[in-house]
Image (cartoon, rainbow, N blue to C red; front, top):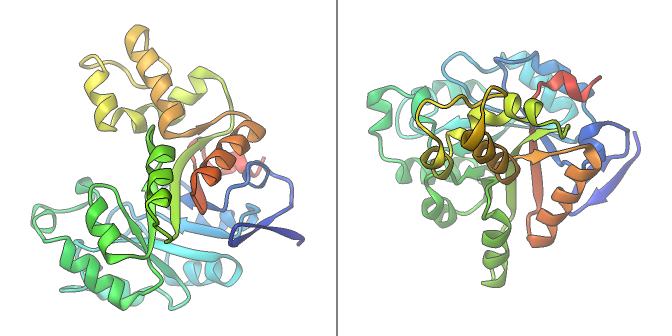
Length: 270
């Protein structure tokens, strides 16, 4: 398979939406698809999201992914099974060939006891154990920056400005950005794909009318807010348009762009 080099990562020249857009990696949610299907997506790296206890692919599936692509698994450091200062049995069960993305953990996936655990010492301990780990910055930006490693950020309206400012201040570490990706420019399809996601972003939630639909049924002010937010917090448009957005992120100083196929992994394989 031929490849070219973009930044520090090889990007396949095989045709396909993800490759045409210049994505470095694809994020997948294992509850939504068979993880093995990502082997056919022409990108060199895959990030497997954590969606709660028992959601991850089994060891054999992860080992197969890691044999063919650079593979990372999101691990919430406060969750039982991944707690470096407590129960870390699930972390120990992951194949040695699989890297980590260390995150505080989405509260919806954690028990009350897990949510009360201190984040900073656990991120530090996990980074000491996995020196090449990426660190998810959502909600813990200062802690993530302090422990170092690849800073893994969610795309937002201010990402380009924030990253450019970090670079101007002399930050030389690696920055990766996660973005739901929708390879169409149809408003209804965009809202069905990422409306509920962007509605959870705090500035968007504050601007939405109470009880407003967040999918293609949204109307009036809610629809305007959601469509604007979709283009702030996601990569939206045909592959060439997404490619221009990816190029803009790189110009601002982003090293790696990770796309989550919000309309389903199968859309990248059609």
